[in-house]
Length: 366
Ligand SMILES: NC(=O)c1ccc[n+]([C@@H]2O[C@H](COP(=O)([O-])OP(=O)(O)OC[C@H]3O[C@@H](n4cnc5c(N)ncnc54)[C@H](O)[C@@H]3O)[C@@H](O)[C@H]2O)c1
Image (cartoon, rainbow, N blue to C red; front, top):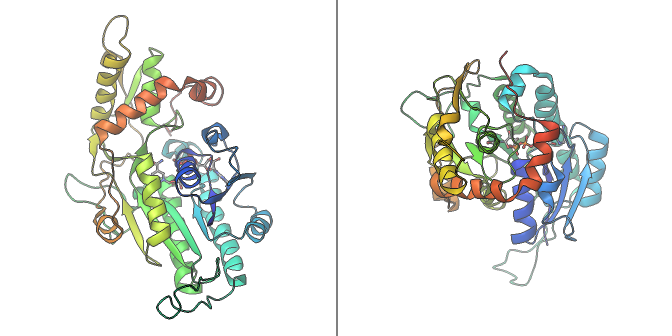
């Protein structure tokens, strides 16, 4: 049985990765999460009683504690997702982004390097020579450090073109600049120390257990509350949307099969303007939960744009698709319907978050 450390596993994507690993991959998971405002332990309800799941509340910047957890758990792989992730919050208060996204990644790399150096060499005989010989695991050659990043490091596209793995970095927000910094650190630890790393850069995710501050859950929940549906600027900014469970599968595919030192872009090939996204949500809600009078799109309200709002992101995921055989299973129409159905059925999850931690106020106006 394999053992994976997941950082940020109480967050939106991290919890999807934990659920997938424990339920479908029979992997033993240690989830390290500080439980910031974005950490929601209830997202792990489906696996919290599994003997293959363990949680530790810890800050990834805390080198002493993280190092002792590495030594105790003896992971085969680390999937590093812990981050401050909301662009608007990075505009209001960049400090936590620098601390967690840059220094937290540095700390994780150093803990991983120390642990990796303590592992035995792989002394197993090649399978061709001895079919029954099994490598000792973990060992120095099969350990992996997987850094999870964003397409926002590449900056903003015009009307044409796609982000490729070779696209130059050009981050524009404090969030994307901090993620770009962390990507550079991971590459440096590969080239300088030989730490066995893989990196993924993914487009916008959506799906169940998405914290209500992000566009899609905010619009669904504001609509259900009969509140305005805010759209920044003219709503013409374009994002490439990926269903979170497809992302979780891509990540596990890369940590298991990705080539060392390589970057893989992950994307859904589902470009939509923000206005199209909101209108689609309104149409599905009109069908599934009609208002007493009027249509949900009547609640759409255009508000002042986000400062430095990137115009368009779009991912070329060819490398991941052809080299590792991954492909998104959901398109935007099927994924958004599943997402809306999930929010309609799981008020127990989002209602305390809307009442306590974030009730929909505008963030990031600078
Ligand atoms: N959401 C997206 O669309 C998207 C797209 C591409 C890449 N990513 C990347 O994927 C990762 C996960 O994103 P998400 O949307 O799930 O984020 P999220 O904000 O939902 O979750 C982040 C998690 O990290 C934890 N955390 C924050 N600071 C920490 C610290 N110092 N120590 C330990 N834990 C800490 C939080 O408690 C939370 O559980 C991030 O690295 C993000 O940059 C996100």
